[in-house]
Length: 179
Image (cartoon, rainbow, N blue to C red; front, top):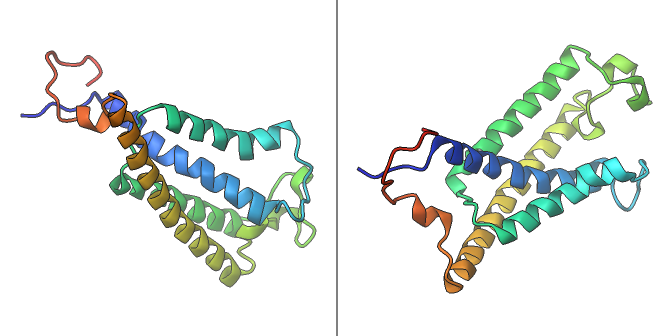
């Protein structure tokens, strides 16, 4: 019987598979759909830049220096997250949750303002196109990240490091207290 990595490591790997691509998607979506660099409506301050740009580069830097795995088959968690987020945006619309006064939109009463202008369910066809476009971008991004993972692992292998996925089949000499 082959041993498995401790649950805490497997959970970290699954969370990495979710958060790394999401950080890139959030950055791309924010600077193209919500606050396009060619038509900025929000002034980029420290918090905005940290949340929607610096965060992504920290993940990319971590990806380049570590050996975290990135499996395509685990990418389904990203779609589960996207489905839940999309469902929440519909509930937000139907329940008329609205937004805080400092985020008020000009097209609707405060309780009907969408979370983001691109998720405006007052215009469902346009919103579905955006959601499907983001799903397509997610597929492409996952393929790019998977290929980059393979290239990175090849670099580690050539330098004498062993990728983390090679350790998954190894037997543990003693049970882990994290299982």
